[in-house]
Image: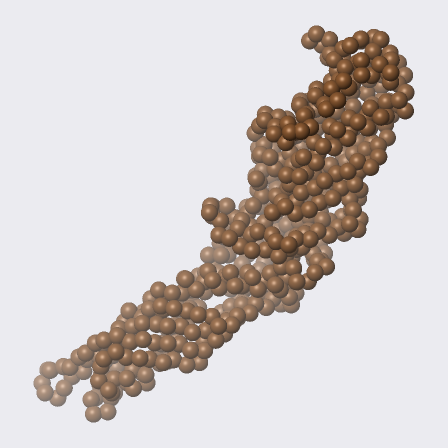
Length: 516
């Protein structure tokens, strides 16, 4: 059974026009601004610090010459990073990659020490052991990340990684007075080298792990057994000195074919009126239209819609949700003004219908006759919907089609953000109609028009708005929550500009939010 996302998508597609598409374009674009990058940087640092703490560094041993004492063999073992604190940090994208800087970094380590040396009195040796605390002060780190489109997947890799320490202090617990200077002289540089090497190793391992997750992002997100969303990346990411942008194909494709193509053409970068917003997501009208067209072509079947305006419209059974999901053709057998589904209710507008079938019950069979058409302009969505309405008379077990009326409905659409869903509303502006065929003679359209207006306003539009009010889930990472979003309409695209927060998802087995 298709999940609720599908019928939401298809009804939302009523606001989407036919759009010529190609496989080498991106129809969903996102832009992470400097504020968004700062948020991501802080999140990555908070995740990296725990991987550095409790890190064991290989033991360091060295033989040094101590005045009067002679040669002393000193070993530092169980060297452990206990705490890391990043004082200042920055993230800077450029045309080649993204660099994360950390400065004024302090690092606390603990270690055990042991020394031994021989004496001039035969084979007798002297040894001692104890513990020590090491503090690294003023450390600076940087890691530059490269991003590359590799056959429709995003390849994340390390371009440069550096670690530099300004000062080290060593505090020995126990030991002779000469030991301190000997350890400092002999081990300061090895400690610098080993700690730097281990930090660089850990940072590279973290990027490798993150890159593996990014690389494994699915190129197709299955919605049901019919439709999947093509999430292949298109072209390399767009990099500027204060933002990072991505483009994915974003069209719905047939799950049964399982085919997808990656492309090389990126749409213009997402543009937000408020540069302080953390992220921008632009969805081309073709995204919704592709889903509508897919179901229109793949699932041509009759659907029965039992419509009750309040409260039943919002509490449909799962079976009826399945019927509504495909949204191609359905039969209305319940309306708020139930007299409209009896020929007696039409006796004055279509007298020949009542005369031929007196007091007979009726159904209204509605089907989309052509793809809807939409135009996005500044702050408004104009939609035109084409449908055929067949009047059926019910006699015993028979359903007798008596007339067909073609409808062309014009409406104004609006969208908003509810949580992470793109929700909408459609308002009927006007409609025209014409008689397509009739088995009961000529129908006077000017007499029927008020009846049609009532049916559209009380059945068709409320049903659409009930579904649009639930919303269409945006394809974003799990754990991300949009905040203070604004919506812009421009160049046939709906752009969401928003701040966001992050909460660790309970189920981390999925990386993207798409289906509900």
